[in-house]
Image 1 (spheres, one colour):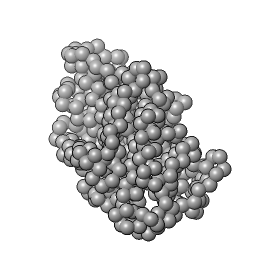
Image 2: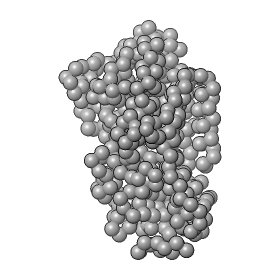
Image 3: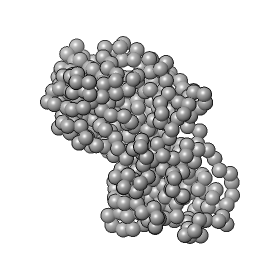
Length: 392
C-alpha cells in the first residue's frame, strides 16, 4: 500500500466538487479504476448535467432544454456517492468541505466548480443584456431572438477571461445565419466588441486573422480592445468613453471564481486557482483543480494563461483520475497533461470550422484552424450525442 500523508485514511475518501465536464469525468473514471479501494463522492447544487456546447443551439431554437441535459442521479449506479447540495466553504486545515446540509471529510479533493458569473459587476448588464452561458439564459435569449425584427445587434465580451473563447464568435455567426433564414438580414446590423486584441488570442495571430476575415465576409463589424464599463438602455459605454447603440445585446457576462474557493485562499492575483500544469495539483497537498476554476500559465503561449474550455477540463480530469488511481492502488506510472485542446466554431446551420492543437507546446502552441465544412458540424452533433449518452 502507498504511504499517505498524516491524517489520510488507508481507504481514501475522495470528494469531487462540481458535476460539470471535469467533475463528472474525474469521478467516473477514478471510481472505475479504484473500485472499492476508495470512496468517491460527487457534489453539485444542480440535479442535472447541462451540456454547454449545445447552448447556442438552444438559443437559436434548434435544441430544446430537455435535449441538452441529463439527470445526475444515475451516476450512483457506478458506485459514486451522489449528493445534490451546495458547497458553502472549504476548510483546508481540517480537510473538510462544508455544504448547506453536511460536512464532508476528504483525503483527496478535486475542485471542478467552474466559473461563476458576476453580471452585477457591470452597471446595467443584468437589466439589458442576454447571454447563453447557462441553460436558463440560453432559453431567454431564444425568446429575444425569435421576436427580433430588425435593428442593431451588439454581440460581445464584457471581461477577460471567459470560458469557451470561440463561443461568442460562434453566436455572432449563428445570429447572422438565423436572420438570413428569416429573411431580415438586410434589416439587421451585427457589431462585435471584445477586450481582446484579436479573436481567440490563444490560437495566435494567424488563426485570429482568419476569424476576422470570416466576420468581414458576413458583414459583421469587429471592434477589438473595447472593454465594457456600463450598459445603459440602448447604449454601451466602454472604458475609453466611446459608446455604441444597440437594439439587442448578446454579451458574455464577467466570470469570477466561486466564492468558497476564494474564501479558502486558493486563488492568486489572476483571480483563479493556480495549479501545476502537468498534474493539476494546487499549492495544498491532496487538493486538485480542473477546468474553468484553474489558472494554468502558458510561458510559451500567445496569452499568459490557458483558455477556459470544456475540452481542457475533460483532459485534465483524466490525468487527475489516472494519477490518483496510481497513488491509491500503488501500481502504474503517473502521467502528465499535454495541453491538447479542440473546439468547433459553428458558422451556420449545418457548417462548422474546427480548431485543434497543443496549447502548451514549446516554443509556441501548434494550432490549426480548419475552414468551415459540413463534416465538422456532423462531428459536433456526434460529440453531443456521445456526451449525453456515454456518461449517463
